[in-house]
Length: 331
Image 1 (tube, rainbow, N blue to C red):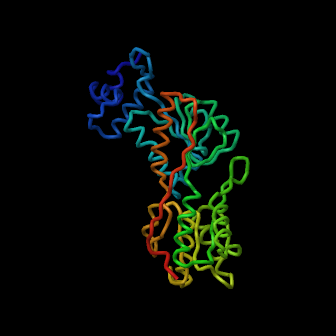
Image 2 (cartoon, rainbow, N blue to C red):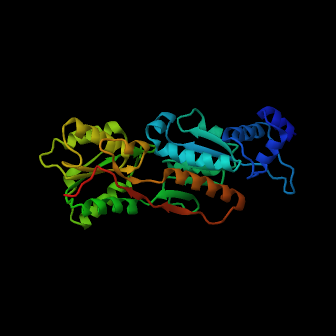
Image 3 (cartoon, one colour):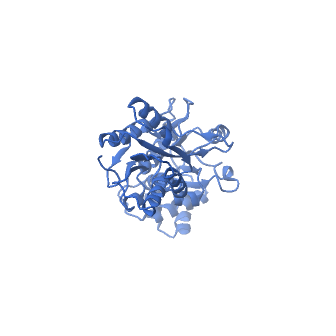
């Protein structure tokens, strides 16, 4: 059986440091990399803590990300979610096993985890497979009707209403929508609630919108394509709501290249509040999605699900807030 000394030798730290890390000593000041190295060594050596309950000294949390690593870098919304998960785990001595759906045999990587955080959109079959791995599971950024499964999602209704209330308060009554499409593994289209809620808001408040709805992908390139298509229309909307910052950034590039002034000629509002949105020309007004907090909360909740095994699952919605910058103006 592995000992603390074995872990210390493997991680290259003192036995005292190993002991304090594995016992979650909050007074210990140690680099996150050192903490993770100790946890990985303990996991690889199959260390078991001697205790009254003969419990494991730490938990292993699996993170499965529906994006590929490359897609994650291009759209840092999901990167922020993962960072929130991993930061919580580092602070609480939780060993992390990370995998992407793009990985070969990614399901096999998760077979030994104690708890699981699933980030993104998954098919019914995939959800069933994940739930068979562990009952300590939470899905982030995907609403699931099953009352036995815990989820954290964004409050899209509040978010869309916040953005549209802002645009209409500026006098805009002709508003376009640039959206994205996402598909599950079985090629099923996953509906974007932002589009549905946008249409409902416009109908309720007599906003002209029907000629100005376009959908492509959640990328800068698709934002450019949709904006180029919209500019072919004879009558343009006075404002545009984009369902992601990458889409809005692509639209901004086309507008700038065509010599249109933003926001004098057209206003635009994004969604996510990615790191790039403050550095566009002009800086992008957007809806802040608390992606990092979603990840941190998700890791915290599934950690407690693992310890307490509650009978009731949780369905949590996080509010979003407006980040007012310079891409919208009052008519």
